[in-house]
Image (cartoon, rainbow, N blue to C red; front, side, top):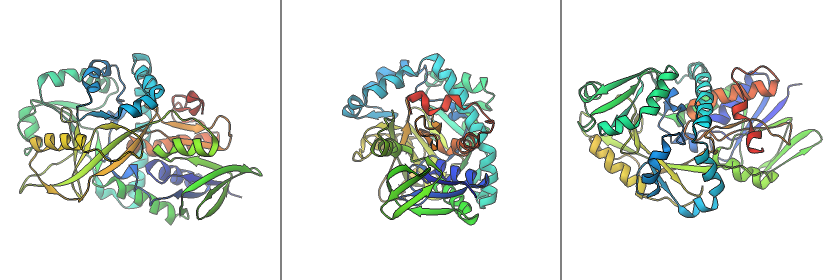
Length: 415
């Protein structure tokens, strides 16, 4: 008989796990309270990029910390009460910015991103969404020569890992993106990156592929889990599911879920972020995503319009929306590009799950042999979801892993 698996969470990571485990011959049920791709995976900038190997907590963070601590920038906003309640996470996050941990993190994330891209290409073809993919890279924008110089560590790291980049002068940038305002004297074109015009729709297409191959999707919120007679039982408002193995891929909700169901303490914080869609003034176009380093936002061409996604807001998962960061980002974006009216009535808010070392937890739970984790992908679940699924499936099969699984082991945080 086929081994059965319940996967909790239908974002990019959870759907990828369901697809990969199904491919390995397991009978998989995918469970989420929302439709696939409608939570955290819905609202990102749509970029697949090896440049995402750079975590926020890198050695350059120390020089930026005095400015960020003032809590006035578009790049980072925080609720002081949240940080006080999560002081342990904050201390470990800063400690992980030291060189040794940073080097381990960038190597591990690069391998996970690199593992993911061929699977994305295959699944996009099989799901019929190749037309959503652009392969013309993305661009980091610098508002001064000094800002460009401050990004040296990032450029050196990308060079060391063989990521294809090209430094652009202001004139070269305008040749690529002629409708950007002439306020950026330098830019960095990440040439081997790709992007999609609707990341939520890509997750939906992967979920539809999973269903077409016989997979089952259940809309429910699981409230309790326990082992019974060598099987897991997951109980929600709509009923009970049984499975040999259980995968928790609930993104930012993994923390409270594991605390409430199993009493586990997950050292996770929530890097919240916003997005809003804009039209463009007549004849103004943008050919690929751009990241305005000084403005603290990414502007991405989407089928819904130009999506402006913001930086990081450290706050409780369900704290009310705050307008300050979004307003700062919009002001900067309108300086950079001829944006027109809003395409949506309200800004979207998402939550990105971040562990202190900016690496996800992928693997077996220490105290529950048939409980598996795949969460904590911070900003890069889109770039790392398929690779995470392949790594997890190999660990579940007892097979040799395509990359070193140890940097992602849940046991490093006592899980």
